[in-house]
Every structure is written in C-alpha cells, then in structure tokens.
Length: 599
Image (cartoon, rainbow, N blue to C red; front, side, top):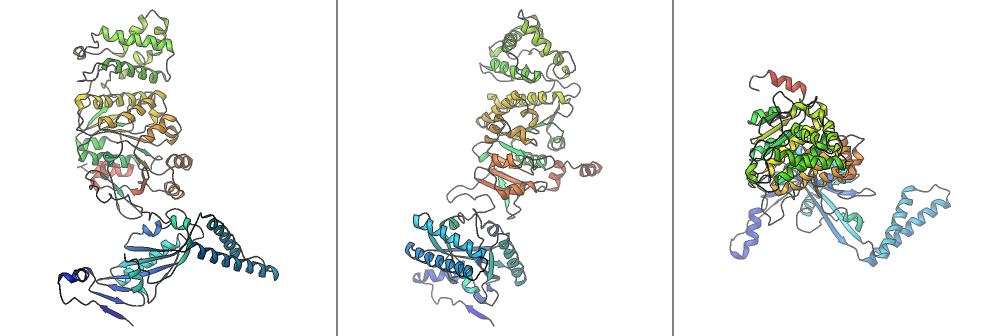
C-alpha cells in the first residue's frame, strides 16, 4: 500500500508568488511514502527515532552518530518544561517509586535495582531543580538516513543502528510515519513525531556543540584557506585532513610516537609536500632515512663522519654583518664545550675559556669589525693551544679535558676547515656515520649551521624555512642541547621558520621542563601509536580523553591524532605510489625498490 504525493506547479510566476516559485524550483518532483521509507525525488530516506538513552552521557555523546560516514540528518527538538510543572511531575514520580519499593518490601521481595537507581536519580534531580541548578526539557532526537537505492538504504540503516548501539542508544524505525519523520529532520522547527524524552540541563548540555570528527571549517565571512598540505584521511568520517602549519600562531610542530609507528614516514610526506610549495627544508637525520628523498628532489646531503667531511665550529656566519656576531659565536662555543664535556665547566674554567675564545679570534685577525670576518677562522686545536698557554692552571686543565676532541679518537670531525657549505632547497645532515659518542655533538653542530642560515639578515623574510630534527631525544637528553633546541623553538617564528621535532622517547621530552616547553611552543602536535608505559604521561600532557587514549594505544601504523589547541582530529597518513617509494623504510619494500631499475 503506497501513498503518492505530487507537488502542483503554481499557475503563475508573478512577484506575489515568489516564495511558491522558489519552492517549486528547489522541492523534489515527488514524494512517495511507504511503510519502510519515503522516496524523495531520485533518492530514498528513512527516519529512525531514538527511544532509549544510556543511563549516563558524557561530552559529545552524539559523536558516533555524527561521524557516521554517510548522509545522515540529525534533528534535536527541545521544549523547556516550566519549573512548577517539572517539580510536580518529579514529586509524583518519586511517590510512585517509593510506593513500589514499599510494596516489594511488604511482600518480602528483593529490592528491584532498576527502581532503586531510578528513585535515587529522581531524588538527586529534584534537589538540583529546587536549588535552580537544573531545568527539565522535553527532547526528541530523530535520525533520517539517505541512500540512492532501497538496498543501500537498508544497509545504511543497519550501520546507523549499530553505531547507535555502540553508545547504548536504542533506535526504532518510524514505520508508516517516515514522511513525518523526514519533515521533522528538515530545518522547519516542527516535530511531527512527538516522540519525546525528559532530560535535565546537564544531559542536554553534553549534546552541544554537536561535535564533529573533522577539523572546523572557516567561520562565515572568514577567507577560505589557501595554503596547507595533505596530512591524510580521517578514518572516522572519511574526510580530508588538510593542515597549514604556516597559518597557526607559530610554525613549530612535534611528532611523538613509539618506534615503528610511522612517524618518519609521516614527516617525510610533510617535508615533500612543503617542498612542493617552495618551502626550504633542512633535516637532521641520524639514521639516513631521508637520503632517497634528497636524491629524488635534488637536495644536498652532508654526511658527517665520512672521510673528508669537516665542520669548524668556530666559523662565523657568512654574510652576517651585525656588530654582535663575534659575541654570539663565543656563546655558542660555550654551549659546544659543555656538550663535548657532558657537563658545564666550573666557573674558573669557563672564565679561562672566555679569555681563550677572544684571544684566538684576535690571533686570527678577526675582531668585532665586520670587515675582518671574511678571514679564515681558527680551529678547535688553536683554541686548546691558547688554553694551554694560559697562565691560569684552569685553562690547562680544560685543554686536557678537550684533548680527545682535538688530538684523540674524536678529532676527525674538527681537525680542519669546513669542507662543505650547506646550500639548496633541501639540506640533509646525515649523522649515521658518526660514532655514538659523537651523535649529540653532530646534531648540535648541524642545528647551529642551520640556525646560522636562518638567522642571517641576508636570508630574507620572504622564504619559509622548515627545520626537521629527527630522533630529537639525542639532543634532549643533554641539558645544553635541550636549551639550544628550546631557544630555536622560541625564536623560529620571528624568522619565518618552523621547527619540527620528532622523537620516540617520550620521557626525554615530557620528563623535563625544557622538553615540556618545546612541546608547549609547538602549535601543531601529532601523536601516533604510543606505548602503554608512556600513555599516562602523554595523556596528561595533551589532555587526552579516554577514547583518544585507547585509539593511540591500538593505532595502526600511520594512524594518529592531530592536536592544535582545542581542535583535534584523527587521521591516517596516505601517499601516492611515488611518495610511498620515497618514504617507506620497510626492509622488504626497500629490497623490492632496489631491484627496480628506475628507482
């Protein structure tokens, strides 16, 4: 049995009938009503009525329904109940509950736990209502599911009922009332079904705002975003996660994940897509993971520790004519010496070091005059020679402690002038060939060279620069190295640069004040799969909900959470075939790529 309703076209298009003409243009050609659905134009729709609610609800409890990957209209009809009427109904309801409890007790029956729980809830609600802390509302919640065919509609309704059941929400189809249900979920402010449930203020407030699994769209009147890169696909809503770090309050980011969670894969995609947009990128790479990417895009690779590759930490920035260049270089040398010695030297040794730094530059003919800064810089061995010649015994003691870095096993990196100048749109500082004892020092030297290129006035403010520090825990475990990274995170934005910190050792980052400061100075925060031992610390630092904790504990490779202030969304990193070939580190895939002649 079917009812067919056809619209009638207006006989005139005069100005007095403009509203009717608009309806005739936008309304469907026909509406066909059956017991199980309505056919609206070329599509099908069915309405589900929420008839059962969970005993307790939390914030955004409607999210599983709103994030269902399909076309779903959700309507929430709210009708406030006057306080006197609400109080009278609550009093009668409590009397019925109490009567039931006494009748059961009089007949020797066990107390009904459902009646007892309902009586306690009613008593609590009556108390809050009397104090003015809550109000009551009649609430109707309706869902209209749309599909292209009857078979697709049946499958979609089943999926929505399953999603509702996952949060203890019971739904029933509006059999023979789907036309009223369809109009009820249209923006007409009319409830044709009148299937209401009483809710208090707290439960109703938890429904607002209607949460979405996707990032918020621009507000009306705001310009549409023009930049950004693709981060991936939202696995909940199947929407695109498009993010522009350069539109945030600062351009820094931090990526935290356990080993094998896909953090380097994600960062390489981010680097590649930023290169497409003209961003200059410098990468500190401890494990040679970015070499294929650099090869593919014509980048420069500096292999620290390889034969013939030298770095002179006493070099002055090329093209920097500021008056305090020599002073800033001296301060960095203090930091470097502290890292070499794995501790800050005592005050007497620091004083001797300061005298030696000033003297060794004067000895090389370099003074505060920018006209002398083009002269060859002294070497670390020249600095230790000056320390040995110092009349103060503390200078000789410091020189003896620096001997392994000047004449001993670790001297290969510093015993000559700098051999390669980092230049290009992508510069990768490879640390793989450095001994473990030199990794932290190499990372600091690379960051210093990168920072000098970013900080010089000749660099220009029109070019965006991205500095990527992979395995940042190597530097964060050292106090002076962590301070250097923190200073860079604070000052990068003013130089149109962003710092991207990637680490798998959460404790080294979140367990120190400097590490937490680096995190707080990153507007873009990406969390991938976490270890159970670290999830509590991560959850406290980023304010994760219970669901987000579970998601990060069970996340698959490449799945994670993007956090920026109050905005957060899940995403799955995706790549084209060519991008995947440059980003993957899976041994089996790398072996297959090595056999292909074009790769």
